[in-house]
Length: 305
Image (tube, rainbow, N blue to C red; front, side):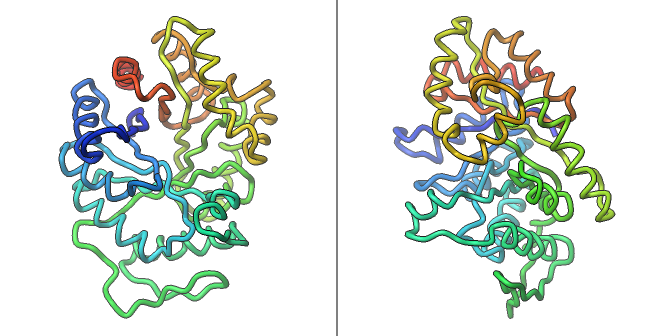
């Protein structure tokens, strides 16, 4: 899988789908071969990935990431297989555990036993994608449909989990195709994520999973100003316990130190450190996404890594 970029449709665009397609096509023209789309409250990432994949032939599309709650895996499977068919085999499904506070704000409730739900969610998806059928009854999820679950042209679908903790990495290694960690630096990948997920997969008799490192990135010659901007953008994550653990494990002062910031050549070197640490791919997460010029500079870097 080539170096990817996280694509942000412009919320001020006349048509957000048209804007995403235009951006994706331009990125493809610059040499980018993989784009990822984040789930928002206003647009659906899987549906948008399907449309982009259909409009830009040859471009890999994926989601980074869709929270598993409150979505039932039967619904996710049908959406993912439809996106896979629309993109003619170029779709990747990225899922996340979500967070209790965002869930309470959006839905008025949160879901307990997250790791249990993740395991059961993946068990259902794995059965559908691998066998075309499912008959599952778990503690949190039941999937016993009385209708077909396979979409013609929609399988197989690679599944990636935004896993960084030990329990999530264990489940991911057993049942998914890899992990999509965010703000997990080279030290964390080399010393913790890669050994943990590789062992889990080996113990389950599965091939070695991919590690797609999501790296906040800005190409800029004004490094100090760029880092100040990064600090503002990443302050939200520094308040979350899961990311506090990741920052502490990396032994850095703040999330700013986990961003790739600087000239194009400097950013390339910083991204290479992730690959040297054991990441199989890097996913560039642009922070100054509203600036078209900066976005294209970043896309050019992605195409060259």
